[in-house]
Image (cartoon, rainbow, N blue to C red; front, top):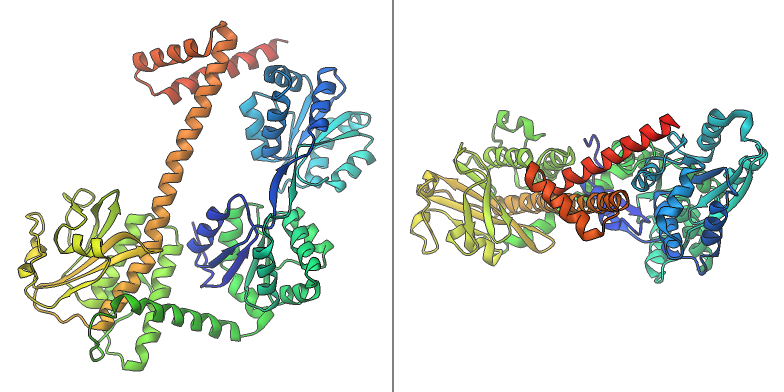
Length: 569
């Protein structure tokens, strides 16, 4: 659960493979992300070392194999699978001791069915690796013949420590990192740091540090980069990255309690503003407020078609949970922009708390109710081609999550189709676009305001506000609800993407389990792939279990058999 908020700080991440996920996570914690790739993964020009390792492993030349990354395990297996039988390689691994650096490595090895003798505890640096090996082997560590799967660049500290313990090491490079094909984004990032236009830098690997300074040297900006970093909050994912930063003369301002992205975001977001203030002085908070002010000004564009009117009373609660207890206060013209900044903070805090979407939407409804003194408020979310009612001021248990409106249907559907607000001061049911829904008594209310919820130009929903009696919706009210729509739109879009990701991830994981179970049945029963699949299908129908559950049962049975065979041996 999120506990902090970056409060709009400009955050640079040098990520390549998970750029979209990192940007989304930064936004979730209230930051303004720029994700610039600092490296790209490329295969080695030759797979000689990996294939030579396999040949020597088959001949019993190793006592210990140390795996350092989950990706490395899979890549090494794929390379060896191009020449040798995979099962032969797996059986060879089962005959030696295996050391695993962290949970991702262990997961990849378990997929292969390879038992692990040594698991390295967090933060999984070379120091923990040596400590774990010492604890497992003691004096017998000396003289062991070990192969070390590398990840991008040699870990010289680990290799030297193993050598000091008398271990005979063979390096097994599987993949490496190169600079991106297009260096311009990285050069722009360096210039941004040097110019003080970046507030926070996130380093997730040592290679990101190496490449950032390498490119800075190529463009003659090393000194400017160092000076910029001195005025920027530096976040390091863990000890290995921190050590590389130290080699370049950089001391990170923050390292999380555990070397995980979630821990880094959760913990750093609560301290980033204070850390930046320590480096740049109290002007930082004034600058943040100015940026929020500019964001509020941008929210007015959607309501330009609505005539301007005199100021209206506006109440802005300091938090959404207090909104129902706040009375509406009359504010002068000059205070309205300040109120909107408070509004953004209130909603931002609620969204940054990573609450379920329904809870966030209901609290937004509560906020709008207090702000506009409205009699009704609905929030519809676009799902496929239909707007589904997801939150309401008035209780509607029978239709929440069930009532759907087609695009173009009624005033709400018109707003969704044209992505423009509609403001009707009185006689809403006489509007030619109006369509009556018998389950919604609010449809007989006089005044009606409908505003689209947008995210990056895409429609994600609609907010409806209604009053029983005639009510003039001022430009300020329309702008404020539009701004709420922008913020809610980002949250809804993130929830949708997260849901799609979870579905795809689950499907992929199920497919992997089914494939693995098929392979086990083929080897055990001497049948082909189609026969194994039909056998699992038959079990699925008879037991009324899905294919994933059948696959898990097959795998568990095989693992129990192997455990039993090992204990008997």
